[in-house]
Length: 539
Picture (cartoon, rainbow, N blue to C red):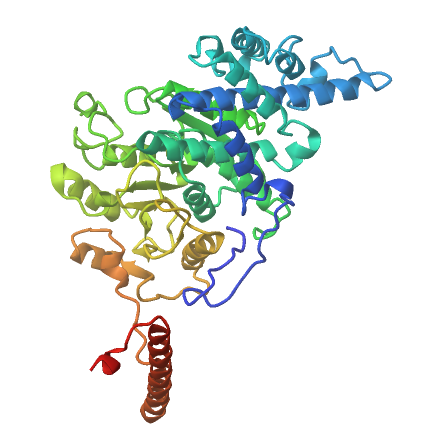
């Protein structure tokens, strides 16, 4: 049985059933303001010059990672050296605290002292090679192209100086996850700079937070078949950290999730490995194509979270027509949407749940057999909830998107589907990007949880509705929330009596007319003072 959850504020839920989880003091890198992170980004990005964002991100993030492991190592080294019995050269002293061994010559003070040397690029490459050699989990992960960068070496030296001033590897910074927040903020900024390509490695934080908060991965096997830079895994761990005191789950947060992932793009896979490493998160995150070479073939996941690329045309479907994963129908060779859906269903455990992002077309398309596949999934009782998202959330596309939630543990609600229309939610963070605030996430997730637990849920026109499967059938198994939730009620009038309103408006009109006449007299006087006759004078 799930622990008690927080319910949504507003009309959808009538009662709050748990306290808001308390987070550790974020310190100077408060997630709400991003002042600290944005200042670091401004300084680092000012040195980019004409380098492509796709290339520059590996330059910057690789150096940040190297400084982090070096700072962590040096703090541990000095602490051991100052103790009476410690041996700073004993590697077991570091492994027990999840600190990477950094050999002499690869440590940040050496990088910093050589920042102005013409050979700084090669020095950094050598450091990366040595760190990888000493830490097998980092094999083939770190960038080693600094010596071949087509940039002025003085610019690379300035970047080293800039990163040297960021406190990230010491104990205090680690306790506040300063590096984690900087790393994620930089990923988001690079994703924004790269536009469509940025979506290949980064899912916006608010979308990941919503998926995680709705699924509540308190413990078990967590899987992402297209994991990008590993944001789903990071937020799953963060979810457990936020609830570690027991707030909201009756003390059931176990913190024992096991991570399984796969990413087809090698450079993005490297970002994922670094992202997990800086947080001390271990897991089986493999490089490869989940369709053509599933590297977790026997996995039964308790939680699946994913943001697969939308509407992929060339995914190899013509070679996989007889694949055992296509239990609900053969997905079209020209669109991978329902290949992703069925791949995830295939990997669900007997009590597993999945939440993932797809293009809106997946909810209503009938082309190439997609409608039949969707019908079979609905009739199998797997569809738990559908959420229509607002536009402009993603860096990679302006295509409207939605969230699917599938579940194998629907004993009390197997004949119903919850529809949530969140298209009007969120705020514009800048001219082209929208974000869901914490209050939005809480409202959507709380509504879902209240419906699941049958505690305080009620339909709200224009926002949410619990629908019987037979009604979904009547609509041809179309899963678009707007078709079911209807429109929000329009307020009729403002409650002010008609006669009272007319007297008020008439008085306001008289006042405005009096003000207009006064302004006319002032303008006329000023025209005369300038030596020009007013119209009536000229006549």
